[in-house]
Length: 108
Image 1 (cartoon, helix red, strand yellow):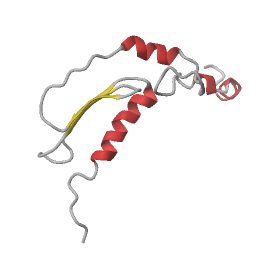
Image 2 (spheres, helix red, strand yellow; image 1 turned 180 degrees about the horizontal axis):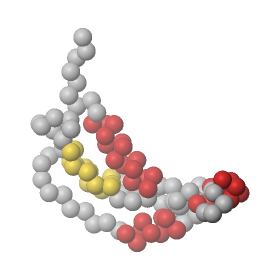
Image 3 (cartoon, helix red, strand yellow; image 1 turned 45 degrees about the horizontal axis):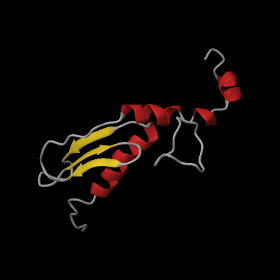
């Protein structure tokens, strides 16, 4: 019989919330207690960092730099120095293969 591990998903949940911020170059915010009534996880994440993280009850506020998000989205999807960011910039637009889109979606 498996032992009950009440909080084993906390690391996974934490990783998923920050991953969504990185993938979408957007802020993600969550508060949840799927891990049990005794302990939840509140987070505010930017694509570059976890801004707020707490397992305690309360109200959490963070300043969100929307101009930074716009800048990250406008940058080329490149990797290499200089790197004035802590995430991969761009929205994968530089990886699109327009010949494939034209062939499969001629009206697009």
